[in-house]
Length: 255
Image (tube, rainbow, N blue to C red; front, side):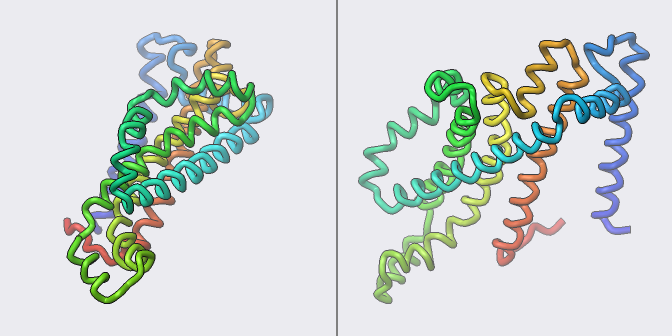
C-alpha cells in the first residue's frame, strides 16, 4: 500500500472519528441542541433549508461572488504589483498609501460600502475585492524585487524590448509567488463575501448565518459554515491543480 493511500485512509479515519464524536458526545454531556447540534440535527435542518430557505440559490450566490471578487481582486493586485515592480519611482511614491490601506481592517469598510451603495450585492463584492487585492499585490511586488538581475542584464544584452524582458524573464520568475498569493487570496475571498453578507446582505450563506443566529438555530448556522468552507476548499483546490500544471518544471520535494 502506497504512502499516499495510507495518508488518505488516515485522513478519512480522523474525519469519521470527528463526526462520531460530534454526533454522540454533546447529547451525552447534556449540551442543548441550540448550542451544539448533532450531525443528524444538521442533516435534518439541511433538508429543511433546501425546501424552505432557498439553500441552492443562496449557496450559488455566495459561490459566484466569491469567484467574481477573487478574480477581480487578483487581477488588480497582480497588475498593479507588476506595474510597481517595473517602476521603482512609483513604488516608492505609492508605498506609504499601499501600506496604509493594507494595515486598515478591510472588513471595517463593509458598513461604509452599504451606506454608499445600499443593501445589495455591491458592498460584499467590494469587500471581497479589497481583501483579495493586497496578498496578491504584496507577493507579486516582493517577487519582482528578487528577480535575477543578471538574467535581466543578459536579456538587455540580446537587445530584448522591455515587454520581452518582462514576458521571458520577470513573469516566469515571479509566477511561483503569484500562485502563492492567489492561494492565500482564495481563502480570504470567502471571508470577504461572508462579511458583506453578514453586515448587510439579503442573500447568500452569510445572510443565512445571520438569520439562523437571530432564530437561535445553531444547526442552520453550522450548515452555512460548512458550505462556506466547502466553497473555499473547492477554490483553493482548483488553484493547487492549476499551480501543479503551470509550475510542473519546478523540482518536487521528496518524502
